[in-house]
Amino acid sequence: MRNYLFVLMLIALTSCTKNTNYYTLNDFEKVDKIDVHIHINTNRDVFVEQARKDNFRLLNIVVDISNTEEEIVEKYNYRLDTKTRYPEVSEFATSFSMQKWDDPDWLKNTMNWLDKGINEGAVGVKVWKNIGMVFKDKNGVQVMIDDPKFDAIFKMLTKRKITLIGHLGEPKNCWLPLDEMTTNNDKKYFKEYPQYHMYKHPDLPSYEEQIAARDRMLDKNPDLVFMGVHLGSLEWSVDELAKRLDKYPNMSVDMAARIGQLFYQTKEDREKVRQFFIKYQDRLLYGTDLQDFGKMSAIEKQTQMHDYWIRDWEYFVTNNIMTSELLDGEFQGLHLPKEVVDKIYFKNARKWLKMFPNQQEK
Ligand SMILES: [Zn+2]
Image 1 (cartoon, rainbow, N blue to C red):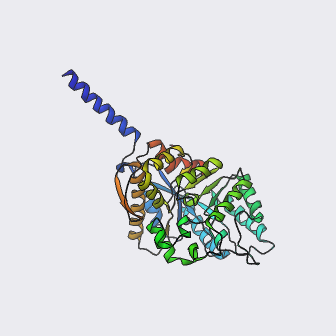
Image 2: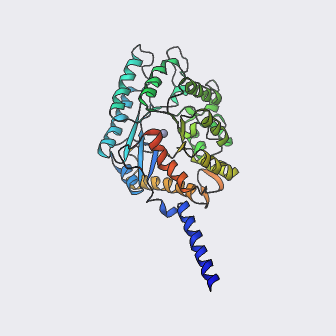
Image 3: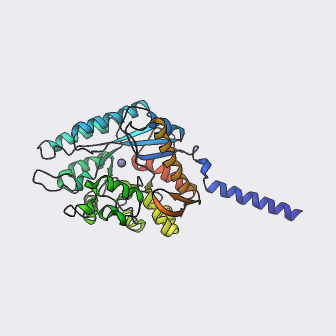
């Protein structure tokens, strides 16, 4: 009888430690989470409502997609509006337009614009792949991110401790033919947007040149806090990404729209990806690139958001065997310890982006 009791106690104890070290699928709603990469381009509240239900806070980012100043201002106003109405849910990052790059006043006007955004609460400034892949100056030369004309902006951001959020280059798949790409979402995206499918534009800078320009910019600005979005465009290899994180201590990355590449690498070598997350737990931030343009119905949009968020939660916290439309085949969830999950979902955003400084630390 005594032995029997002892065994029972032991079982109770081990299941107890197990529960305290790891989250389960059911913990999804109760754990505080931040999605550091979303875009709300509408005044409706569909996105924020779902975020509240799923216990997410948001970083709502402006992007310079059309190159026009007008569009930047319009997008900025949506973000300021959302933050003003829901300060406990949504923070924002601003951006700037490349449209008047060749004007002698471009730098001065851009600095004034960014100053306004930072004073109104922007926690970051985003630069997009148009720098390096689309925008050419008046001489027809591709402007790269290490162009000296950007130096004053990056110095100002360093001084004011504002994070530069960089989507520079594209996934390596972008330089491959469609049938050689590793994930289904990349195949779909580059089929839809052939203008960004660099395999079709061999005249434009290569993948390696994009990464090298970004690295030269970081070399010039060692104290700049930099978040490389989309896994810093090194989504294809956690080993390559680890090298950059080692080299640039002020660099972090989000995983927005590249979770498929993580699934892919997990399918190939789960333990390697798991160890990467544990080793670099202070440098990785959860983000999705979910957006609301006000086009989908509210119910469709909210279902999409919830499905993405719960899928990724399952991947990080459980060891379930999973499948995803993002890639072919099965992969197993990473079953990361709680403290790692808390960092990638919450604490790292507080640390690297200074989000919600007035809210209680967990
Ligand atoms: Zn994005």
